[in-house]
Image (cartoon, rainbow, N blue to C red):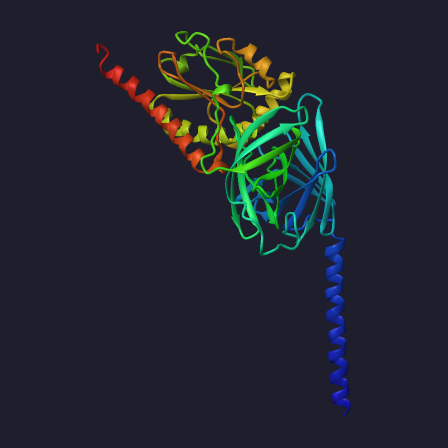
Length: 429
């Protein structure tokens, strides 16, 4: 009997000790000031109080703490994270923007600092909670409206001005992903959910903050609101149209004198002049892009141009980026461009051509009839003649449109190289 009582008492003591250890472990996790690995539901608050959710994963890798910004199929790796007891600061890859927060157990609270030029910084409140993976709705419904397909979108801003877009949405049960294509760009990877006949989509990928809220009306139209960190608020109406397309002719850039060559001369971040007359460009095919480190579509284009530069450089292609930045100060612009170069491991020249303001940029290159969108790519043959200008860029979120554009860029480069190689072989023809 005494042995039985002793055994029971021992088991009881062990159970109490185990429960205490679990409780202490739970308290330790709740009270921890260390940034804990795992998946978080993160939110940003736009001016006016609209909440924009996105996915945030924290991982410990060989290089240290790494963040991943999650929007549907895209996971943007953020390796530049400075973490110390109770706080962290992450610099967005290729941008000047920073995300900083204090750590309190499973919760993060801080701000996103979006650099918008000179001394203008938009600061958005940031929160995140570990273990929550839902985006807009904690409980999803099985019976929802069908949002998949192609939609004509008409935006109306608060001043009454209208603009067009084409939304391409995919849906799997309640999960909705896709993008909106615009005449010169696209809104990259949007992700969200449908709930009955309402849909919400959002994005934060380091460069921009976007939010859509819409309701399906009795005519089958999506009617709602769109907010962004730069564009403010717009109303929109979307109508299904499997053949929806965009007319980009109004934003096309052209040469004032098609017979004249295209010349430029600007300083790179180290203060060295990059000129169209440089001997390194003599007799080469040039792809000159008018771009900016602050522009998400320019980031997408740069990923393609770095690959094209490596693929065709041995055959005579040179890529040059004329950077139009957010700052009037050359030093700040240079620092932004250096971050951009490092993120994409750019090997081709990048020259700082001026401020991103389209009017200022147009004055910097008077040979053009105007710069209307970033990025804009000029394809120039070995004689210095501009053979093609492409305004804007369709990024990877557009799927087939992106693939067609990359193929078009490659075909143009191949044709210019082939034409010039033929002339070199048969100079008298």
